[in-house]
Image 1 (cartoon, helix red, strand yellow):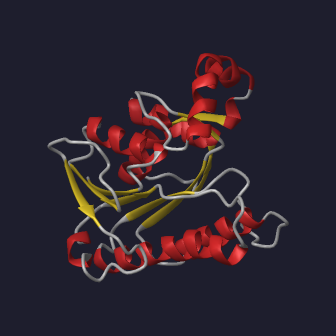
Image 2: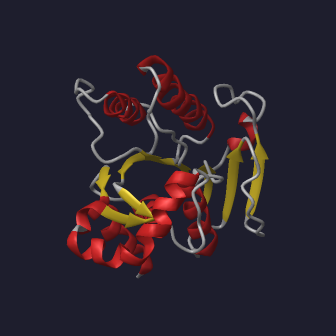
Length: 225
């Protein structure tokens, strides 16, 4: 497969990109970002692009890909619904609409979140916006599309969050992760498993289109085998 990764400078995107580099099913990776992802590898090409609402300058370079792993995201804390919708729904759809035009045979994987509201009517603002984003992505006409809804994600293989507070939490949690995993297996996953699950659905498909932590972990095990 030839894959595109958005958000490879972030924690989840870093993990997904690294799994792609290690997996034999992935032939090449194109990383699209505003800043360098910091990964150098023979399988990886990088495009630095400033305007994530307009891809006209680079759209020809997005042709012929088999999958997109879209890992961009931000916290809704302190944001109005209008601003959060622009930076979540509108930004994601701008990329997806370009990709479905340039690579219509692509599988699109979107990192959403546990608790996303598909009805778009719930009381949590971020969940409504994520739900609308998922729903609109499913309507675009990709060959296939999968909505990843992870809960807690433990970074592995040296992956770090750029947010100091989050990284401090992950550092504290790391020794206890096996315990929490045993107690709450449906709420815990890792950057490695998210990446492997994306590779699995992009290469072999899945009957499930909305993937919670248990589904992500199960798909990761299939990818390993």
